[in-house]
Length: 609
Image 1 (cartoon, rainbow, N blue to C red):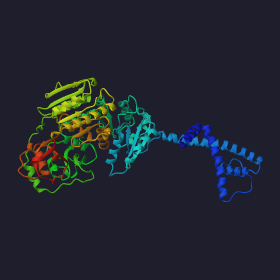
Image 2 (image 1 turned 30 degrees about the vertical axis):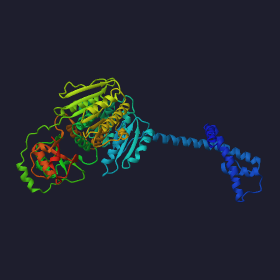
Image 3 (image 1 turned 135 degrees about the vertical axis):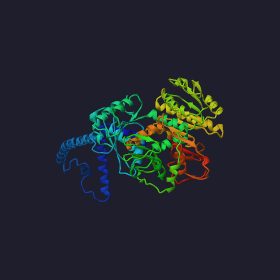
Image 4 (image 1 turned 120 degrees about the horizontal axis):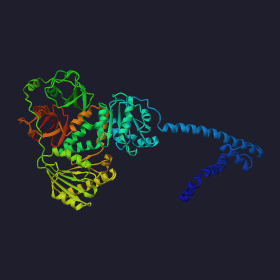
């Protein structure tokens, strides 16, 4: 009965005119109820029932009081006219106020804040960027972030409000407008911002990031504001970089993913180091003025820092040099590139008299290539991104490595190009979701790494990610039933990193690469754009890279117990820069120099070389 009454009541008052009648009925009933209440308290008079009811009704809605019909009729007419005129005036004013509030909610006003972060565009990475900016500014005043894109401002605000409880230490403003329009973008006050971030927008159809970048540049006449841009492809990066030299810091999503994936294939601890550099948890890369270190050699500063690791210098001509000549003399305008726990710490020289003698006898040998062990790799799925990954990975694979590609032939536009691979390669093609073929392949072989790639060239990103996650579950189930002591590591590529929470992962044996990487790098560059040169150097195929070398690769050590300082000297002898070490499968980045290592035979050195 309750449901029946509710159903018909909702249908009745759904029409606007019926709602007025409904209110009148409620008023009449309420007047009767008030008569009952007055009766309980003995407050009713001797008037007829109708007169008492009418007085009760007029007290509720002021419909027209009086002692007789004529007075009531005249007062009712006054009431009706009053409601008509005052209601019209109130409605007019309410409309004006409503329009004013609506215009405010449209997010069309100009920003007057300065030193704020401007984020132009919208995609799934934006909340990860919020989180990283919040972490980066924990020791500072509450930073302001402006989100500008083509979303309706109320819709944007609603989506942010759903997540805002996680971001208590940042202030988020929203503005809506055309991301191609110079005048609209002028409202962001980008010329007075700390940095501008342009995301690969998923809201605007056929989004053209180059047009947005050119419109943003028109609002920043000087080159003093860094512009960090998330490109979906690399076609025009070189041209735009030439146009906006020393201001544009481009991030290619696929390039970053392929770089980090190739590092993860080389060694799981290298990927740990890379992620440690990218996020704001733990140790980070900082730039410090040379100060008291002017006149000292690079190796002197290296050995005299106790709680930090020196990895390079930013020279006075704004050039980043990692792992420089160890006899390089620090200049007055140089900045030291340091791995440190906190930029609040003040670097000081430590009193180590014996190091002066040690520095004189260190003979630095020419740099040598690090030894890469052979690996057996199974690649599930394929895409153009997969080709990028392996073109960068193949040079790091040791002699005797084997690579097997298992993919749906009907889901790929181009098959793996292995012409330049000197290692043993096998292509396994299928036109079905052949679970038995996958199972036989995993059981018959001991793979060091299973790399799961999406079919991004065939499916949408969402469908491709779903396919990859299902393959991940299938691979883990097969490996569990295999029951072997051999350890296989799974590397899973996802387009949308937020989906990683949908699957349980083992940190020791699984690694997920996704667009979250670009969110981390974007935030780092928004705070310190000079880091772009550091990451470009470390992630490039040529030049320096992060290596993890076993202690056997260094000069023999007779001591059973050695310190991190001793490891630094060992790396220095081979013209390498120590940044940490691995002991008992545990990675230690930027350890204190006085820390003692109990067993050198189980230790690997993390170096830049």
